[in-house]
Amino acid sequence: MIKIVSATRLSESLFKDSPLGASLGRLARDARLSAWIAFENAETLPRVYNQLITEANRADVMVFMHDDVWIDDYHFADRIREGLERFDVIGLAGNKSPAPATPAWAFANDRFEWDLADNLSGAVAHGSRPFGPVTWYGDCPAEVKTVDGLLIAAKCATLLDRSVRFDEQFEFHLYDMDFCRTAVTAGLRIGTWPIAVTHASGGAFGSPAWRAALDKYRNKWSLPDK
Image 1 (cartoon, helix red, strand yellow):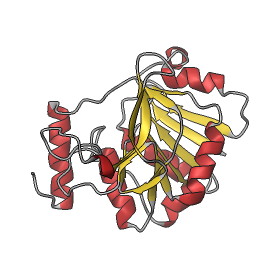
Image 2: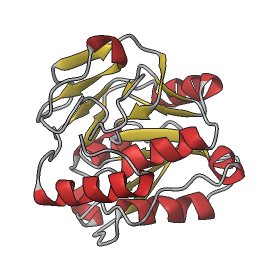
Image 3: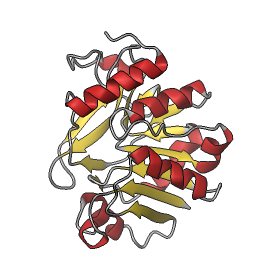
């Protein structure tokens, strides 16, 4: 079973009209997919995600997604399975060779200057409606070291066997960067995979909460601050 895992501040009734909720309704007849949603959630994303890694069947495929993502691709289940036949962890956009101090998968430094085009991979649409305009980052599929946390997929058994989890000291920001570094350290291969989605958010880079998370991340991994 492919289990879509997400957390939302919305109630169950309001979630149905959210980007992810509407997408799940559209894909409801695909028996290969199931969803576990933490409604009216007050926990951190890593805590929610870790709970499901522990509780899920070892045979499950886990797809960790933000609630503001429309799944445009109705071959979603096939895309996820295909990607995980080639890589241990997949995402939609990532960086092949991030600098040690990089603050996010796409940036080269704290000034939010884009990394070299040759380092980037994947594509994601953005907008306030599904099927938004597409941002092309680079060739895909490709092996990368980091992926954007809007979607991260892996087999449950892989995460359990390698003791890979999300670090619960991160509330929302930087949890994806930390997870990817943990996965690579554990010997897992991360890759981007072509799956059509539209993300309703561009992120909150530079906010005080994001800066605090960046400090935690760099301290944990003994990374330079520039």
